[in-house]
Length: 187
Image 1 (cartoon, helix red, strand yellow):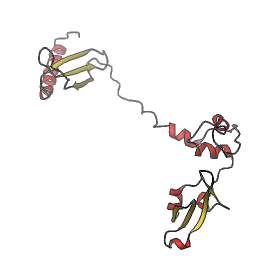
Image 2 (cartoon, one colour):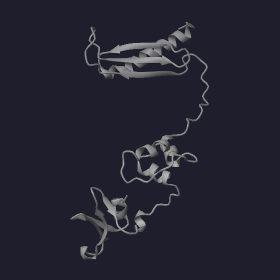
Image 3 (cartoon, helix red, strand yellow):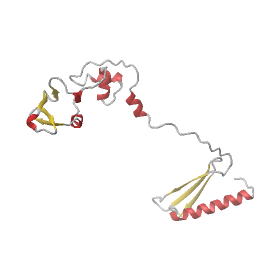
Image 4 (cartoon, helix red, strand yellow):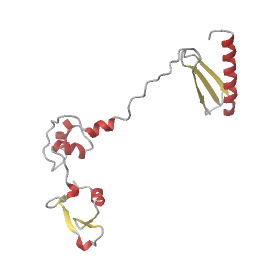
């Protein structure tokens, strides 16, 4: 297999003309081109000795095929040979895990542990404003705001006709919580 983009990155031009793959340095003209490969029964095949752009540093054929075949599982590689003509025999044995597959599956590290110990009811309250809803409610409301206590998980929901009413609703909610707290009422 030849990577055309790698050839371009190495400063080469590539052309497919009359069943031949021609390549030449970018700073020269096409008359300096040499034949890289020829078309034989469909795919193009590399002629002679491959150039440095096509050399790989993989010791095992199974690793090379694993990379070239979209990171197929190693045990599936011998089965692919049934469907692909000209593919060399690949053993399914592999001594470890592909580092590229491991790093591709690891998206991020764990979150740091929280040092904030919140043990008091109503010390931390989460809120969410939702809307506009696709249809008005019977009372003409399009939005609602939710307040949720982090410890007790008690939830309050208030309906709003307009989004700009959210801050006023928060102030009213905060005032009612503070007044209930002063009176030592339970929630």
